[in-house]
Length: 282
Image (cartoon, rainbow, N blue to C red; front, side):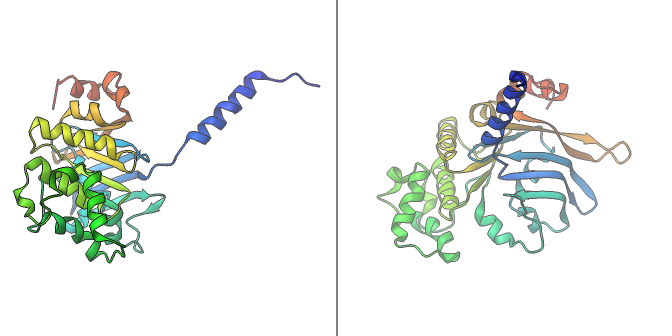
């Protein structure tokens, strides 16, 4: 009988453990380039966003972070001349395939914008609007509204004034209302485009705490100019920068580095990442 090769056995065990723990990304970019007419806004992006993780997109202005974010739920379709090359997959399905309904993509992959944008309706109707227009069959709309506001850490603050205008809320409350409105249509992914840039520090911390709570139920992708915020909230970080075309001078966004947030901030592989993190440029 041949002796057992313990090294080989250990390697097989490690492979098995890695396979058992591996979960394919919920969102995956494969050689993605994004154009506005003939202008190449973002070139050859490759990374994935994991289940129940927060992924931060960071980088200087004009590097394509928001363009990439909007491509995840086909918001760029609303811009004339915009097009995507490569593949953006949601659970392995190309969301830009001709058979895919963009409206359904946006229901499953919700968006929270930079500035709070409540509807000119009551707090209650802001939450109920999405389920109603999507034809949700629910036993109790009241229960759905309460659930969404509770998940957005807003219920206790507004439960006695649900029929009042959403415009009467503070900026931070309005942003949490917008998050609750997104949650109400039962997405799996929440995209956030600089959700705290218009908020004061206390409201910002409330939103960051909320993101940590929501992570257990959702995949979250956030664009932020605040590197400290990315370090506080994100599991993974993608650093983008913009490079000038040698002939036209047009600046195109490129993904420089993607990885665990601690690695990106503490031991970046690319010097451009280190220079940005350390404040040498951007």
